[in-house]
Image (cartoon, rainbow, N blue to C red):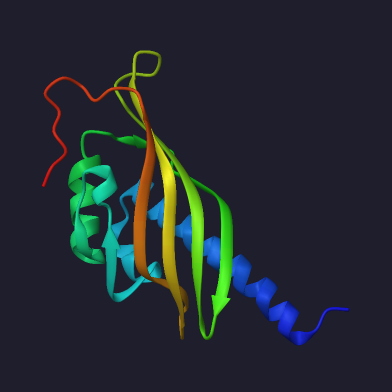
Length: 152
């Protein structure tokens, strides 16, 4: 029999999955105005495994915007979401698979990055948000174009 507590946990798990999908959509569409729908103020991110930035979410997302600029096509997918509730918050590990491309269909330069997001989540008045994230890239398929450098 479902209890009020078990129904709340199901609702929280679905809301956390939606949060992760909202992040992927924000990045793929470069809709950075939605950052407050994903991260709490002062959230800390570590994307150093990708050759990227570490620090405040707004600064790291500004770096990500520069890094993705040469890659207009992104199909960021998040799966294998595992959530563990701890007190009023949660920790979450999810897999990401993020192909990105440039050029004309059929002759595109495509690179796929994949790995894990390790998140600390907090419930706010506006719903679940990411407080801390470590991006652990474990795979890069394809080659960066000659002369391409990941921006600072």
